[in-house]
Image (cartoon, rainbow, N blue to C red):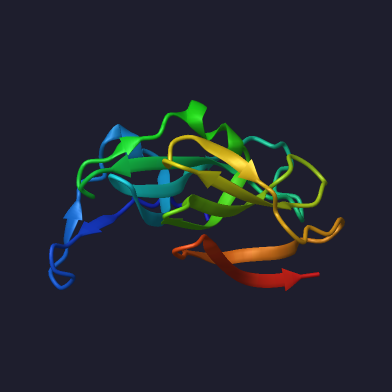
Length: 168
């Protein structure tokens, strides 16, 4: 719709009284905030740029405008630091749909969007610290279909459990 939105972060010490955290600094410029998870030492916030990659399809049917994945870390939920772009290379043209942190690290799922005319691909990622990421094997990825779309992931004492739907 062409309307920019402003990121909002709320903080509370008791879960009842909430107040806004400043998000007017350069680290949040042109950002959508989407996923939040506790990580060792604080919090990991995931979002994406409001500026789409130029993919040259001029809004053609089936064309997916893709934005850059962004991440921030905070020890207190008040002061945030951007994760360097160089650490987010694994997320090139990926929209993160779910993320969770637990004893086995941090697990994230997303959808990779091709630049032109190819099928979207589901992706899985893992990190020990929320800064350094690697891709993980995604199960049940049939060719020619979207396959499994993970919408939630939760950490357990022994690993992770994710849920979604199968769009075949």
